Length: 237
Image 1 (cartoon, one colour):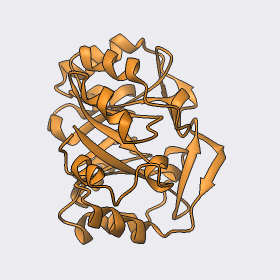
Image 2 (cartoon, helix red, strand yellow; image 1 turned 90 degrees about the vertical axis):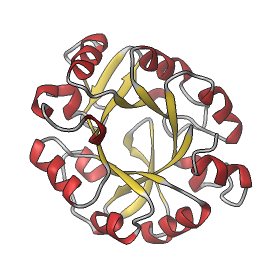
Image 3 (cartoon, rainbow, N blue to C red; image 1 turned 120 degrees about the vertical axis):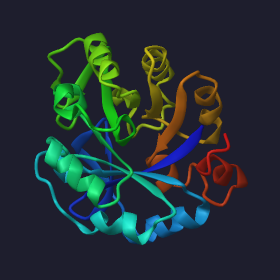
């Protein structure tokens, strides 16, 4: 299992939200470029990049679009505001290895024909319901119907966020991650990761291949200088 840093950007700045609420935002003074350089030096092999402006309906084509070309040793996955097939193709053309989004949840057939490996379904869960549009709107479909539609089309990669734990450092949502993995997805678990000890329970869940961390890395709860962090970033957990 791999530790995957999350870089959430709003108005060109690094930010973390609590429970996905833009009214509960913490901005960081470190520039996205400087933080990315630190992550690369620490051993990061994959970065989850989120355009929060796009997630809340105001796509902002910032400097982050050039990150894949500047850091070719890192695989980038992009989320936020990718609500059309054209937007997905544009991101892939920029060098993003995969896109993460709710289009796969809301209109899975719109992605028919795309390679399964380049799409990571954003399964953001509040209880047993998938939520979309910056975690503000519940899906009209039952979660199990969403899962079936995605798997039928060949999309078996999912980023599972327990929204109730996001930005809280309260520990990962093991039940949510395990539930989706048992349905047949390769899961990246997101929300609540607080320290390196949390990786153990996640790595023990069949089908969970990654753990997303934003706040814990940004605020030093997971120290970049720790050899265990490097091993996790390189995928050695």
